[in-house]
Amino acid sequence: MKRKLGFKNGISFLIIISLFITIIIIFAYFINYELKKKDNIYEVASSSILFDYKNNYIELKKGGTLKKGFDNNYYLNFIEDGVNYKQKIGKNTLVYKDGDYKLYYYGNAYVISKTGEVKKISGKTEIMKADSPYFLKISDRKYLFVDKKIGTEDGTIKTSQYLIIELDKQGNANFLNFENDVKTIKPIILKGTLFDFDIANEKLIIDKDNQIDLKKIIGSTNQYVKKIEEDNKDKDKDKNTYYDDYLTTIKNSFNNLTGSVNGMNDNIQKELAKDEAYLDLTRWTTVKSLYPSVNSIKVNYSVFDPNNEFSEIFIIVKKGLETQKIQLSKTNQSYIIPDLIPDTEYNISFGYRLVKAVGDSTIDVITDSLNVKTSSLNYKVEISKITTSKIYFKITFNNDYIPNSCDLSLYSGDILVETKIIKQSLIDKSGIYTGFFNITTLDYMVSLKLHNIIYDSKLIDYTAYAKFVS
View 1 (tube, rainbow, N blue to C red):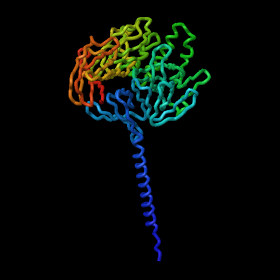
View 2 (view 1 turned 90 degrees about the vertical axis):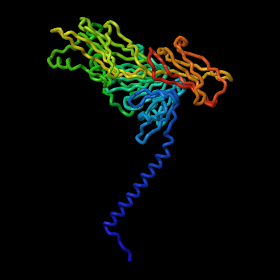
View 3 (view 1 turned 135 degrees about the horizontal axis):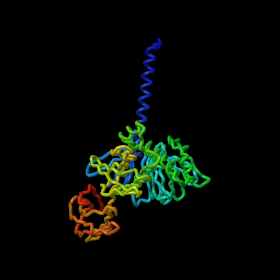
View 4 (view 1 turned 135 degrees about the vertical axis):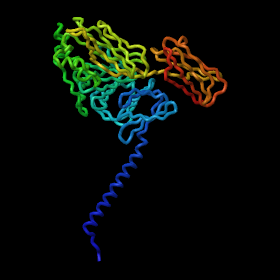
């Protein structure tokens, strides 16, 4: 006699079967993931430059590996001073190495060709510099421009090879590459050898009859709207033009400025609440752009004060607890902040002091505040030639950051053979120093270590290497 399954037994049986199938699916997924994981590990050469997901500058002294994680983010693994590091890079990144004829892009993106065609890429993509220009939409409001020359007509932006462009929702842009970390606070057009990029409107201009609306590629959260003042800017040449410029500047500076603006301080807010506003159309100040180098930051600014009401224009430079206030000239349009530390983030605040209409007290107003990082040192050590009796080398220093002195040590395997002290007076004007070590017998591994770098009587935390395997 056959026995029928009861209702409860049947339900239990179906649950067991469902769980079994689910386990098989999960197991198969992880097997597939492990098999593909090897394809998601990439070697990154020494001296390569890239940025992490927070746009922090990274220069790999000894190279490392990029690995795509389970969360689809890339993670950088590298060793520095004997310590293993793992750093989150993000869902995409570009790797640049000076002297390499390729750029290496990792992640998804949309490539816009010279004919206007759009192609999706993923994983690792090698970009030939000689075949530029290339233009990529990486994600919402983020782009990559690869070209031999990239800049604006007025020269405020001028660079080469590549530029990462990231917009905020008001159309302002942050520019990143191996030599730039610049923020803009007004609409500009980047010009290349073939493409022009209208940043605020997110349009790629190939020629007057061929303009690509980049917002239509995966959409855009850009909320920039062209102001009436901009349309009439060139029509009115009288002093009221200053008012139009002021309104545009206030909108860009106070409302957004890449999320970094401090706005007005508490004193000004209290005065505004009393209807005693000191920000009016007869005067204004603003920062136009910032250009960091190894040991300085150039600030381009504008001041309009026809009635001489500003008693002081100033910059406040902050690094941790250290604060320095620098007075600026109202007639100049730029200032270079000197004596800064390489690869260090500073907060730059720009503002003015205004004498009240009633009483003798004064008010300090901060109009712009930005975090800016100075460029990293890029000293390079090369073994140029090895003979039976000598090992020749070449050291290239940052031309604007020549050390007072530094040490170059020769190692045979792990054994220190000799150390040379290199004085500033021996380095030529182009930042090059060449020399040699006398040798007798060497191990299979020969290495040079540049260290103990002294600049302005201070020890700089930086080391560079060159290695040769015989």
